[in-house]
Image 1 (tube, rainbow, N blue to C red):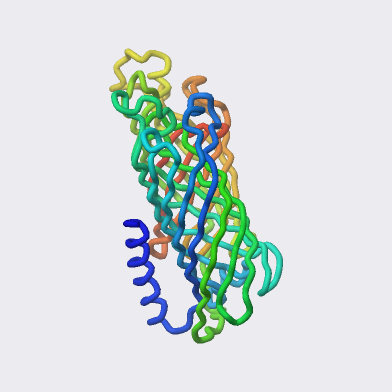
Image 2: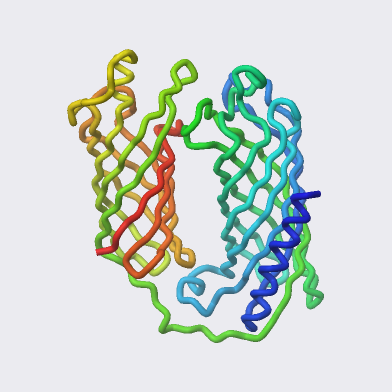
Length: 359
């Protein structure tokens, strides 16, 4: 109830802002999410349970006054507040989340449509691993986690009444990117059952002059920290430096290639856990890699996926390929904030935060 009360306050503030702008199409929705927690590792079998979630969502729709919005079919950006009961009060507890999302029409029309939604955000889990009080929770090592969601749903509109119903399936994932161990993460497939209230205001004409420049080159620097094992909870600090080239495809989609350096002392630790990690030679902690990927523009945010290959790494601690999910948010004309999750075949390496500069 506390979560819903806060959600109503925040949503009221957003609606006040939207009404003041005079000319937006927006909606307010409530969703119920029955599902179950899936154990994808043997270590988390004991956490399996039925889960129940409730979501309050505000969305801004049909964003045609921006060039990027015209390239998606019925583009929609939103903010959702989510509460989930993970089914085991003493092991996994409850989750409180907030985060943005993006939705677009896959097929259909104004009355009936198949919609795809992707979202992310920040989650607070009330229960985590504790060596004394919650040893059986081998999946989550921190209260603060990242939220990732995917959903496919069928939306039905009840004519001019402004009411809509939706039913769909989705998956919700929580993990912390290995900055605290354990970090197996939790995955919950769910149904989505909900109702929306659509509100109209004045029509806005498209502004073709509002273009977003696509840079040719960017440079960036990022910082991360992680733990490697429960037996030795030493915190490792990681620096990532890189350069990338953007190849223009269309306004909302670009190809990207680049090269980067990682400075990671876990290679030396893996060879000898008792070794002093100060004063390591560069070749003992430096990774050199090249990558390629694709990015999608939504508002001022680029979401991207990369595949990378190490040209050099000090040990066999990691596979020779890695994958990365991330986003870049444009702060000013040339500067952006970025955050990425780097992994090896789905096993998280680290979650980083950094800044970049467009050349």
